[in-house]
Length: 429
Image 1 (cartoon, rainbow, N blue to C red):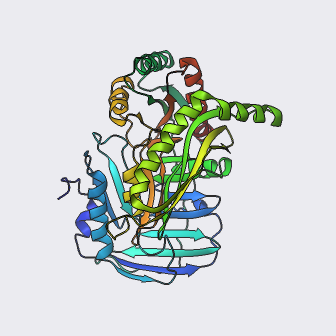
Image 2 (cartoon, rainbow, N blue to C red):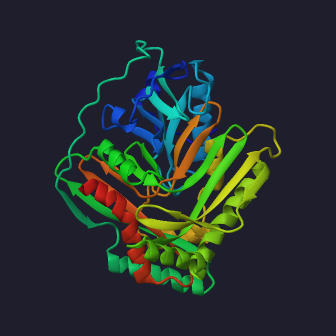
Image 3 (cartoon, rainbow, N blue to C red):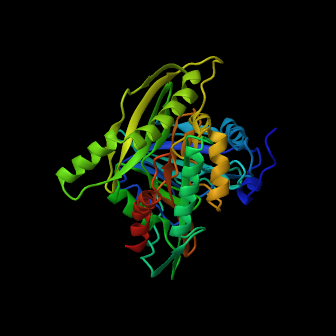
């Protein structure tokens, strides 16, 4: 049995009675994010394709525990197995789908899975609409979309330090470097937070629209108040095929093509960044190899250039087929990967202990898996980076940096500030 869980109103409404799911193909809806009817948005969009959802047919909020992923998977299987499904599309992301966002630290509560009442999606030139209802609901019209409420305009915003001021965080980085040089661990990822307080509630749709427009190569996401645009794809599963994009090692973008190329070349030749990246790649390989009949890992990292920064990136592809017969779902694969050295460190146990000691904060769902999974186990999960946790007029932003023996506290602070900028600018203007 999984841990005792928090029960929501939607859980009480639909206890084991089964969901009714209808998926139909629809004409191209245009901008998916613009179709969201209200601020309580669910989203996973990249370059215009993806999924958006609203309403809650079922919701699970999980307590702390190392088994939060398996407990969530068990609950989802119950929901999906009991559902009455009519699916005219039959592709990954059609039929019943759950959005999810999990805590970084197993000692922290607040992981969540949500099956939306309505899901609108587009992929490879096809668009579809899924409606989900419980036994007590009146069936809706599967061909109609609700009118969207206006997006709340930007409000005046005040910014303040989070758990640590900039000098205090630099001291934490220096302490981590000393521990690494003393041989206690090889790498640790230290994060810091930033607080925003606006004069009116912050509309998640405003952030989604701005982030998607400014960072189209990222995965723009929203789940239960956590909103962001992550460059990092933990795992994609489509049938037996799996894909992962490992990112670790960061440099700024240049003000000219020549400066940009010089910064990129410096990143590719940086011993510090290449070392940091190598830990993350090795960890992903070790997690996926036992689950795959085939696994291909690029020999050398390439540059992934985003609007504000560039990263070392290694693509990993494979075909599931390890021992045991049944293929793991996208959620189970994300659980097997989490947390990678890209967001925690290595060795994992020592890095997690240092994060708890030095950060002086609860990361919540920052740097945890975020994404979606369907009833067939297909899905996409990323790492919740470049994000903010919204709570009415308040937002809590996060940024983290990989610390190794050669890390410089001032340089790491500058990198963290650069990583704050996408969401900070999306809130400000």
